[in-house]
Image (cartoon, rainbow, N blue to C red; front, side):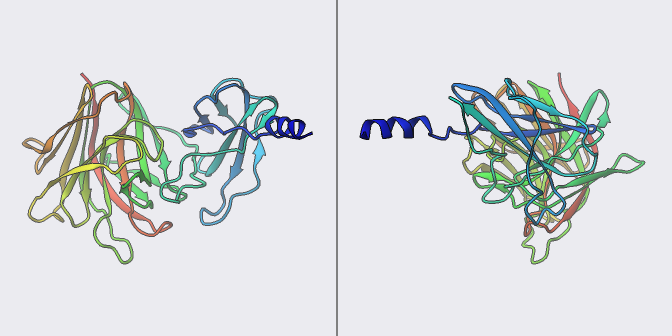
Length: 315
């Protein structure tokens, strides 16, 4: 009898859910991606519409009629500008796991949203706004002169995980990301000056991802931050300008192979290296690159930053 009960409990065990769930926005659609689960015969994707980021989203609805047999699903017929959240479950031995979403960032981003949108096309690249490790969706606007104003909440770009807004595009291999900060970041309530933003190269869209960023702070020194190991605190070097509140300032981060280097400039012509080049061994060939911004206040408080002269160049 005991053996029968043990066998029954094993058969009914709930499998582990997928890892590294992430969302990619598109025009009236979103692509949900995840890592494969061992022995899974299929996956289910559940959709929630977010009406208030400070509240639990609407009840989840399964999107697929039959189990998904790949590790991604394009969800069509969504409304541009509306935040959605997705969760994915795995089916193993006829049992379904608990649905899981993207990894939270220090307890934030449990319902991290994806917002369908038309792309921002610059040259031959399409950029999309991505919400990483935050429940509160960011946004951006492009002025007639090309200036990009980003508005975001988010906890930080530091510690073991990040919460911020990312205007990004994929890029293979060696790349240089440059931008001029025209104004900002603006101040959060009770701010200590750590609102931050700048060009970033990121291995994945997970909140714990390895990455390199040259980040301007509202009142502190520019920081060159590199997360060498997933889910660990980044190392950093400082670029002190004397008056660190002075704007504009140019920022740059480069990748050559697995080595990343940071620069700052007052005029966009003469560049000063920040710290030493840092090698991140085995960094994925294709990375997400673009402009990051973190409001660095209480989740739900928004701040802004204005960039121009934004470029992504490859050899």
